[in-house]
Amino acid sequence: MPPNDRMTDRPPWKVLVVDDDPTSQLLIHTALAPMSFNGRRLELLAAKSLAEARQLLERHHTDIAVALIDMVVELPCAGLALAEHIRHRLHNHRMRLLLHTDLARLGPQCQALQACDINGYLDKAVGDPARLWPGVLTALRAWQEVSGLQRAIEELRHRSVTDPLTGLNNPSTLRQALTRALSGGQRRQEPLTVLFLDVDNFKLINDEQGHLRGDEVLRGVGEALRTNSRLEDSCYRYGGDEFLVILPNCSVAQVEANYLPRLMAAFAALGVSVSHGAADAGPRFYPSADELIRCADERMYQRKRALRREPQGMLRPAAA
Image (cartoon, rainbow, N blue to C red):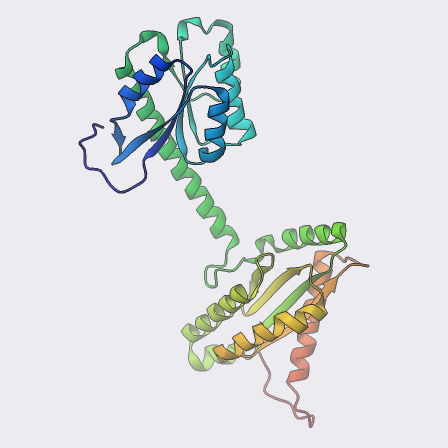
């Protein structure tokens, strides 16, 4: 697309050009610098050596859409080594790699090229800079398509593990995450606590105030958990009006002294009562994930049953 097309304020496309020949660098810059794609100009990052290329890649490789690499940079197969570095050391499989070389002289190196995940080849022997842009344009389109697919996959993955109402984790990965956390705690000889929570009288809230109010309460509980938990904690909507929090490197005593008071204050501000039960592991004994969840769940229901009774022994209305 010519440069006089309507531009936007979006950032430019970053294109890495790796070539130790000054004349070739100038030809590439002349051919590509004026171009744009989808309203975004090209920003050329020039590297005249492998060392320069690796420095630029360390700083920018997640933003570089296309790398235009000469096969011979200081060494005969340096371009292939750089492609290997991008794919297997930087683990970047989104960047489009174009090998700019004399295709007639590749010969026995063609088999090695297949292993490097090269996305395209531009014939350096032709010497016509006008032929560079179509190849780079095709690579930019491919980068855009790959990026769109990756975003879609990530969105699907996020939806598969996230509760849509509260934004917390759903139970699909709970046992796997808790098992991993228990293994880490045992390896480091650190405690770990599971906190089980249940909204009191939730059925009554739904019946008397409506399901919209019920959803509002659940969202509020989820937000209270999210804002009062540490980054290393994992919060789950376990099901219905039940929630669970994994707190690594934290004992039940620490949870009751520091975490629960903040949490209960946040729930009180919402106008809801939440029963809770906590169980910890380590540093002497580490049960299975299921055993720890069952213990926290049982303690929560013990507390809920106790709170149904008045001090005089009178029963309160049953909670949900």
